Length: 188
View 1 (cartoon, one colour):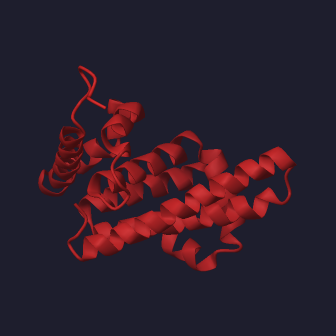
View 2 (spheres, one colour; view 1 turned 135 degrees about the horizontal axis):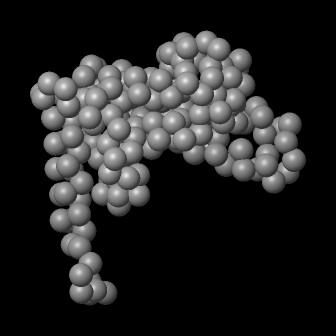
View 3 (cartoon, helix red, strand yellow; view 1 turned 180 degrees about the horizontal axis):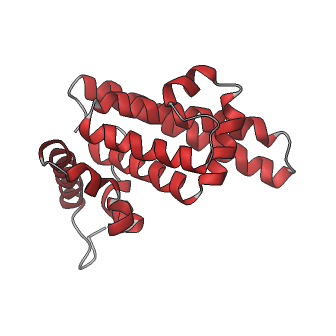
């Protein structure tokens, strides 16, 4: 089917996603003071605009990975109470991931928000793969918390928590794969 007038070429859209993701990471790593400005990029630009730019990129790409990190940060800032609650439940059953995630104890809304900031900041200024592994560990603990909580809820809420747990687990696996790709210089 021919493209409709005005629809961007998918190859152009992909090129723009990769170029902007590389530019964000390069700016954060090379320009003094850039990391704090880029930390709240989704807040300033808008999560919907970032989604338009990066969400369609594969999880095994730099733009897809940055999208996941910004999405995670936005969620813990906007839904800190929920994030803290499911993390607290999950930390009792996912002890290793809890230690890797590094959330201050007891985990409250401020603590999970601080983790979201710390992961994105360390992705910009530190070891990118380690930051991805911390984010993945956080997602694993949240997934465990949701799955464990689902049994204590009504059918509709339990099904919702189970579905969300699967999504959190999928994001954890994607971030772990991205960390491995980064270490091999294959995350582009």
